Image 1 (cartoon, rainbow, N blue to C red):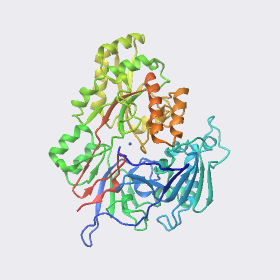
Image 2: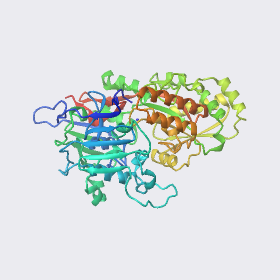
Image 3: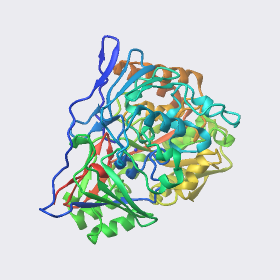
Length: 530
């Protein structure tokens, strides 16, 4: 899930080309002579150490080098494992790989390393979390039959290995964001051993990134060490020789360890913890992310009949005093949302969500217009985070609309499963963020069958047409305008209620020089400052 003023897609005549700059190995600040520079970071128990199975993992980001990546020094999207990514029409792409790259065991990184990894991840029966990253590829539907039958192929028809250094990609529709997609962990390469002995590979993964896996003591820690063979420049790595991901089930325990001097970095610091950290750890311990890339929302499933009426949804939205909650409970470390996208995106238009303004009287009128609501509004949420925030929201809805509200806290893994399987009992409260900076990362979840669409199941042909048109546009200004038009239609139906844009903080010790990438704090990029 914020940072990003980084990607400029340059069109030269009709071609889109991103050429590699010179790369040189190197680390950040070094420890004293003969000393190992080591940093520790907050981590949840990984689902897997394979990037394609757990693409949001900080461990996956550290161990994998993508074809494209954002350079922390330039904050620009640049080729990393690729030399160039080009297209004339944003639908058919040519990729040339850097020469001489290897995996951490010395095996060469080839075009086939990417193609085989993509095919396995895109095959629905493998149930890898990164599967949804391949919906834009030609042949995705063949690997994910809608009737649940067994695929008749095991390869994406849109991926062609030309030779060891060249790939040609065909998408099912134009997508100017494709180079950005290539920067995500689900698009990482895999070595041959990941296919020949997958069980052994899961226990001892090998990749091509700046850090390599050392050990995983379940529910305690994951240890990584700097890989000297990484060919990327300084802006793609960090300065520590050793990284230890210390595993916690909640941020409070991580904070306690940091105050005791036993942890170097925490991300996604709750607003309610910021003032305490300033007092106990000092102002310099806080790192404020520059680009807001996250948003709290209430998403409403279309399959819950009692919540389908747009006027009811707007009534719920207008019953919430966002400004008051942001000022009091969130202590000013958040702003009220008035759009389905954060203000850091070019498509953002102030006040796009007219029903996001607090007005208890108007909310009651809309509730009456919707025919009232005699049931109970269930709000599901992650039991491990934001308890006070969701309680405050529920209290306002109940008091300002006079309806019953029931909170349903569940474990994050269960909540994800309930979303994916369309088993939610009501609205779902949560934090949404992007994998790369683009309005598509927010609005595609409202496209029929789009990314993240499992939560709401929202569908609108006019919206689909606009989102696809915006995605195809190779002109960023035109794309932004078209995305804004799509949003204006979506908010009329209110499949999701925007709530807050949090001020995103990290916590760090003096030794950890935190780095962000397009609004996302990435632990493995940290410099070593001691």
